[in-house]
Length: 105
Image 1 (cartoon, rainbow, N blue to C red):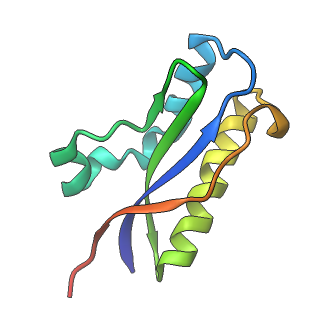
Image 2: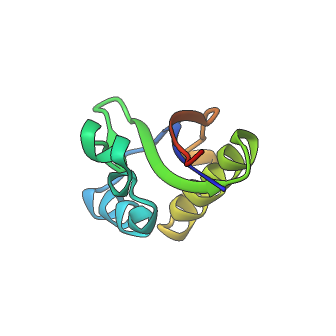
């Protein structure tokens, strides 16, 4: 298994209160990329939100390959958004991207 840091972009189409943003971050905290060498050195935040509503969620995922890691990251971020009370149509996600790979060869 390989540890990946995956960035999942998205957009909040409606205003999202700080309390909901905090809840999303809390739900993603177990996958915080700061637990990896890349996340620590780059000071990656689990959730970054821009003024225009665009956001990036960065999560640490263990998977056999890139495709599985990206799919798992999208699943984790989607679940955190829904569990925080956001409808899928109010916070669409973009394509997940590998931000970093930490594997032992």
